[in-house]
Length: 98
Image (tube, rainbow, N blue to C red; front, side):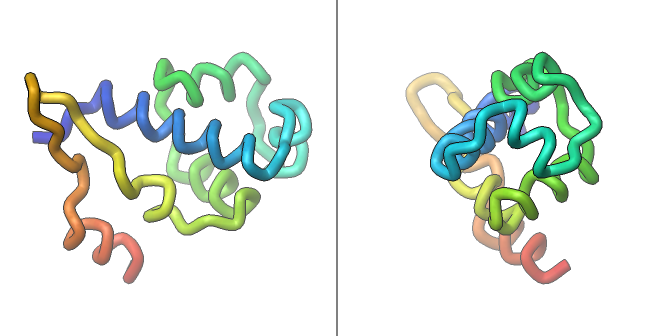
């Protein structure tokens, strides 16, 4: 079962890490990505405290030169001592083919 909380926490971490790899400050990233949001909103997304819209995710992936599946790949949910992929390989392949 998909765990919504962990999904957004890990998605936010992936966004933050990718932004860091491209050496974008929050302000510069918001400007370059043409995101209509404040720095505090981006911070909330990166910390998994706020959901990201599909259009915002599109702008983010375009600016980071990533496919959406690259940001979603490896997201995990904790279930006791077990880790389970939130999106399996078939789900990722379907997203890539949209």
